[in-house]
Image (tube, rainbow, N blue to C red; front, side, top):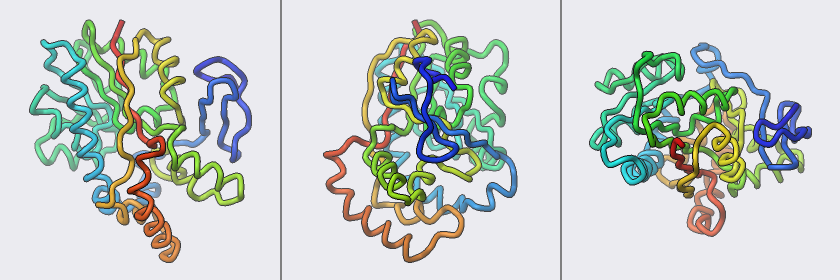
Length: 283
């Protein structure tokens, strides 16, 4: 199959479902989403997942709201959060913007809506009304889950006002833990690699980009890159819950991973982060 970024032929990767582009380093997965299927959610402890992610994402979301305010037009008032999940980004952004969230997972979206947040259940852009346009569109840990990413980015251009800003917050293929997981996979231990792709979870990753190949892909849809930045990918608070939120986790392995990562957190700043944010403006 052809690479969606540069058109080169992709090569077989580290698993039967994994492929890479030797030209631009884009990586893809043939994993299928099972959102809203009860069996898929049975493997995921949503309470632990929420507890494990909230502290980290809330901190990162405040940073992203700052970028939105800085790079959007001074007259910008409206912001769309695609894949708004528990509504944490909506809570962070609503002091500056009039916000709307779209969330495909009915149960997760309903939980956010029950707290009074403006969340619409469905998929982007189908859940929007014909005349709805925004000054800022944000994807927080979402764009890497969307199979037809080029159509999604093209729809963003259609749904943004003049000089509108698109913000993509996503995992990076140059991140320390992703690279380490690939080394482990080559040595025969595939569990960390599968975990980072979120294999067997309701919404697995189907893309892994770095800032360079992502900028090429998004640029072809009519956007110019304004800024890239790294965001923290780990915090001690919530780490244990984050590790144990998936299914039947071996306790010994769990605590060994927890201890190793906890010790590594202070020195991780010298390595590339596993989370990046890329900010684009509609041409």
